[in-house]
Every structure is written in structure tokens, then in C-alpha cells.
Image (cartoon, rainbow, N blue to C red; front, top):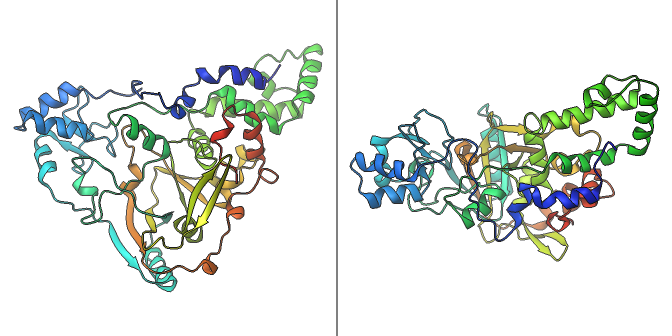
Length: 402
């Protein structure tokens, strides 16, 4: 057999680290694949600079950590496990005391929007600066809750904006000192999903025929180089998936998790102001097995649209058209998706690229909405990828279905 059966996938799912994220009793104590922060070393090094033990513990518990061998203090919300200093996300130990006393000084602008015309004017002005900008809409602003916020990324009177992807939101709620690295679905599970786009019985028939003819196809690379065109195409796809899922396809696959309601370490953004407006003016709700978005307008002046500058930590979904052509996931396409990557040492990384927060401070009429739910969340009849994951994933209850 060229593919593991669904029953085998279901029997193996418990061993797949990915599904731990959905379990209420998961403690998030898995060690990082990179470097683990050292509590005692952090406390000792901070005390050596003149901080009290209590001050050092407050900084550590707020996410400022030292990694063994690095004489720097990293803000794990943004800094990454990088041995350099930028005085914004990674600090010299001597400047640690300033974090306790520095008032908010983020350069991000907050602008109250008073009409649709005003919104369009502001966005056109931002585009006119020559920067590639992206949007994210929410029905309200959320902030990072920690005793010592990063002053350089905290907006005076507005807070340190939380742009945590879903997997890190869950982690912070359970164990904010965790540095558990993200684990995606297994190769078995991704294969189970993507192979639905192929005629597997016919592929197996041809495979058997070629082996009987003496071609001896026992590896993926051998299949990719065989004489049968259908098998060559399937062999190439198998190689691309198996070799790429932890490398060039990693962001693509986690984007799919994010867009279909599953936990992911990427934050979804959009190139479309209209898509951002939809998410800013419609509130998500889950009722039983079905999800819905209900119109709330500007949510009493709480709705926001974040404007971010494009950065090399981001990836446009359409960069992977060739690999995804077999199942054509529709949600990222219809939502003009761009994602920002994160990691266990940079869980709120998108906030680093936030330029402007637009607060919708006016009554947004429903008739001005240009997008309906079904346009950006097509059903399984037109979304082959949605249909496949509903067939193949064990925990279907976590998939958003409208």
C-alpha cells in the first residue's frame, strides 16, 4: 500500500504531539528544541547588575530570560534565541533596570476613524508612503498582560498589543513560562489529507504492474523517475511533502491549520482592506458543530484594524500554488492571506511590525459590508481541502464549518 489507511491514522493520532494542544490537561512542559532559558542563571545575572532578587524574578516571569552562554536578556515575546543586542527585543544585562522604569514609548500610531471615507483616506495615505502594508481586523483590541511590558512595544494609553497566534494564546493561558516548540500534524496525517486528491487504487495498480515488469519501484525517488507519467507526478508530490513539511512547506501547512480552525503558530493577515473590515465588524461564534460570524458593526467603537508592514518573517499564501493545486484550499485564497511566522522565543512577533492601529470610532452600517461569510469561507462542496480534512482528521470537532 502506498498510503496509510484512515484507521491507522486514527490509531496513531494520540502519539502525534500536535493534538496535545487541544487537551485541557496538557501542561506545556516540553523542552525547546533550541536553547532552554535558565531561571537561576537569569536571576543570578540580573542580581549581579544591581537588581534585587524580587525584581529579577518579576522580569523572568514577564518573559525576559537569559539563555546559557549568552550574556543578553531576551524578551521571549519578540527576541528570538539570537545572541545579539538590539535594545528593543534583546538587551544588555546592564540595561535591564531600565525595563522596570521606562514608560511606554512605542512608535506605533493609534488613529480614530470617524467614517468609511476617513478610513479609505488614511489607508491610501499609508499606501502612498511606498511600503507594502497588510491588515488584520478584530472586533476589539487585546493586550499582553504581564507585570513588565516591553516599553518599546507598548503604546502609551493603549497597551502592548497582543497579536499572539492561537497556539501561543493557549500556551500563555496555561503555562506562560513554557518554551514548548510547535509540532505540526505528522507526515501520516498530512499524507492522508493530500492523497485524497489522487486516484490511489489506480496508482497502486500501475505501481504493481511496473514492479512486475521489472522497474522495481520501492522508494519515492524511484517512483519520481519511473516510466509512468501518473506515478511520476504522484512520486514527485510525495517527495515534496515528505522533504518539505519541516522546511519550505512548513509555513504553508501551518497556514492551512490556522485557516481551518486548528491551532497554529502563524498569525493570519490580509492584503485586502475589505477582508479586514469583515473581521473587524463581525464577531465569531461557535454553536455546536457549526460556526458563524454575526455582524456587530464597530462594536461600540472597539473594532480595530491593524496595519502592519510586510517583512521577511511573512509569507504570501499564493507562493505555494504548485503544491496546493491538487486540493486548492479556498479560505486562504479568498481571504487574500499573508501570514506572519512566530516561534517559542518570539510568540508576539507580529507586533514588532505593527505601524498603525485604526479604531473604528463611528457607526458602521451593515449595508456597507462588501463581503459575506460564504465568500471567504466556502463550503466543502467548493473547497476540496475542507472536504478532505473533514474526511480524514480524527478530531473533526476542531475544524470550523459554517
